[in-house]
Length: 424
Image (cartoon, rainbow, N blue to C red):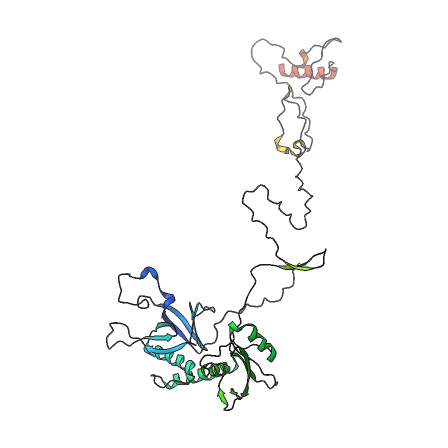
């Protein structure tokens, strides 16, 4: 019976790369790409970066991060370069190159590290430099060799970056109240002394809460940050306009000579399992750490018994299959009957297939000897048989039937007549 087809299976969506401002192939050489086995220890006049090899990636710029992928179909990046600590971006011509070298290398300087990149063409180098400078400085650079179409692409990326920063909250933002923010700063002084939180007036703005120590006493201040259009305004004596909340936080840090540090809470996790246990005798509750079972040693004879499978009680053993009886399970085919030897070979066998019963043949007539010129001799036949006496034994036919001892006169007359015909 045919069954109705089920609903079509929903296709699994293919993983796609995130939206990037600009993407393409980049060859990167930095501290993470060093191969220690390829270094020549005898070379003393080269830095570690010069001895490294370039590694090719598919790269994409999103926000202030360059994501590096193994290929252009891989949705998961393998490395990333953070541009928040940007210092400079310069061209890096290869060593020993001539003046005709197009110069497809550039160097990205960050705080504490230097990363070199190499691309396939001069146009690609200018494009990467232009997009990096656009998201870092929030303006399209004018000192690069760019076409009008390239500048238009960078202007679109600038609009997206400004919109992203306007809605992105810095790490020091916590959704807490005014009192909770003050308690967090007092309880965790090592995590920072400045915190960004939602405003208390319900207008959709934000507030900055700071805590500093002055002559041994805590000084808590709250600053209001209002939203105006796509930007923000710090409500002080001389209002300060900022394009994003990141700029608001950076303004407080830079204008206090680093005295204010953005709050960064530590995420502590317990390493030991524990629970609260009540004492039945005195009713007190205590914190209890359970004792972990000792690890089992392979081959230990005192190991616990293996738990039974689901649905099988442990007290029921697996029954063994019954032993077959040989005499009852053997079948003798019809064609494999044992051969039976009989004394009388003409006798029918005991086992015979059912079928039509053969007709019983009559007794053959005796053969008449040929006529010769010799003296007539009386042929042997039935006429030569003597009548058996009453005590004589009667011969048996092959089928076990007896021959009549008396020959009728009619049969004897016919035999004599036939004999006479033969003599004539």
